[in-house]
Length: 240
Image (cartoon, rainbow, N blue to C red; front, side):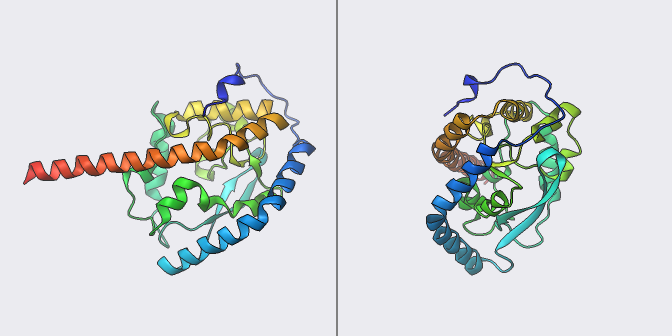
């Protein structure tokens, strides 16, 4: 589902004085508290699975960039092996930022750093469930741009940093508007559009579109991995 075309207009400069509307904070708290009886058992099961299939902590804590460039500790379920090399992700992200190509995740290409069931958690977004506590603390919102890493933020052009003029979110306009089929610049423009034009109705539309978007993303990852596996097998047969 793509709803960005409904509101995407030429970007305008925004005021340096930016605030988070009260309705957004209330919506976050009400929805999380309402869903918590369902979310807590699910999170407990995920934590148990991670504990069983991999040694190390259940949660992965990482410094991210939030509202107006402020740093905070972002929570995730750990989906990679302990002490996994992050330089691969940094170089891959840098290449996406500089190239006019779709932002396909490394997961679809195969990643030996991921633990068993980790790909399922990542493609479904379930690894990000602990971020509801970041939302309750006011560091994030349910809807907003994904919080970027400090080294990513340091490479942003000044206009690109405007995506941080709202709280980062678990889901957002970019996530429900093609995500892996969009380029880095397209993602930035969608995030800035949301930061400038967020409304209660838009947040509700994005939240409603999130589950279908996640299901589509899971299918895309599955198809991409299957295609690469088929190509790899064909190449192996030829080389014999």
